[in-house]
Image (tube, rainbow over all chains, first blue to last red; front, side, top):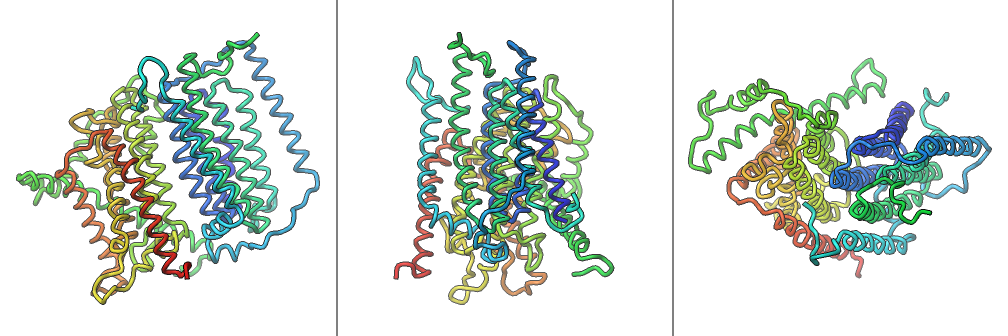
Length: 178
Length: 107
Length: 341
């Protein structure tokens, strides 16, 4: 059963990622990206990480993409106009570089490479205690410093976003979102 | 592709998928003009990296990879908030979201 | 339960489909009754009889409403984004049905016991924001857009408090799985008081009830679809069956979120005097019905909150309150587990 689900989720993820890049309408791109994130969440479940799957949907698909949609609606963006200087050369160059990168990745993956040393948390033991608990144990013991630093990063982002959206000029006041 | 009829998916399949998604993200950044779509392609690249991290965490029997994904998600959220605020400000100043029209410093 | 003649994989799949269909029915079937009950309750609170002409006690009224909506003209605004216009009503229905797949209705009456069941509920309420946002945007109507943006801003603000208000429950039960949370609420305190988390976590329950009202856009938090103020808010450009989809979606959301509230705080399917096998689902639906009546009661009792009052409540009151609740509960659990000995 697992390979069928993997193929399903992988196909949807790749198709929607392709549509994100190719669609002219930004709202459509955003919705395809949401679809891509949800199929990635499905893949995380197949990889025995249900907690991360749920967090992926909550954070990425449920918060970050909503923010993207808000900004697209705020700026009232309609269909993209593909114009500008050197348009054909730019796009050709882009796809060509993509091709080069694809070739590099192919060679990388074909070369013989092996896994590093195995960890001590086999899937059955983790499933017995629960994925959330396993992550929590690691997060609050070995990785406590990055956790605290991440909280400061988020605080800085909040303050930065608020400061950036203050309207400079005639009146000092915080511009409220509608 | 003989694993399709089998029981489990080999690691190479997941890593290839991650590479393809990363590739699409890179192409998106290079080809598109709209700053918001470029930003979305960056998020795609971050997710491809997340997929690779979770794959290795699963196949190496450890949870450190998943913890790292947690941090990547938090930092991505912070980055999106600030980045979109910047894009909104650029739109207010230059009335455009196309990156090639923001060229006052050019030449 | 193995169906003879099927391989284990196929058997699992068939039973999964059956359970999913059963739970979908459980959330779709009560909707006409809720519509009827809303109008009856509204009527009696306002000292009038409510619908009483169409069928006995007006029970056929919802079906008459559906027939009326079916015969209305299906509109498509001129510059509307066609795909998104058709997508938004569908998105309004999906989260409510998906949540029911992790809610235990009886002692073995659940579709699946994911060990992050509560997070599935939070994920679905995050996805519910899209229906409202896209509906407001796709109508190409400034009132719709304002209503849609307000509704989604309100929903994401209260999602935070909702997640934090259930942390206390998770700490007490020790698991994110809804099945485990219900099982942890079995038994009684002092012989008569059931061990429901509403008694252990009153602040959490109060906060969750407020966020329930805000997440489903019900009064007193229904400014985004304010009937008397913003025309119809985010679904102003919808008519006929697509409007019916939003209408149904709102009631289904209410049902699903009440179901989650009963599993988290009101003991799920636990109840006295009846054998759990069939008494479990009966008690569960009784509790859900009580919560639904409270939803309807509140609608016609309280005035609507102004938008800035609403956001103020969400960010400046509920968020610190639920954080403090989480900290106090964590302290209590640490003391109970003997960390400070």
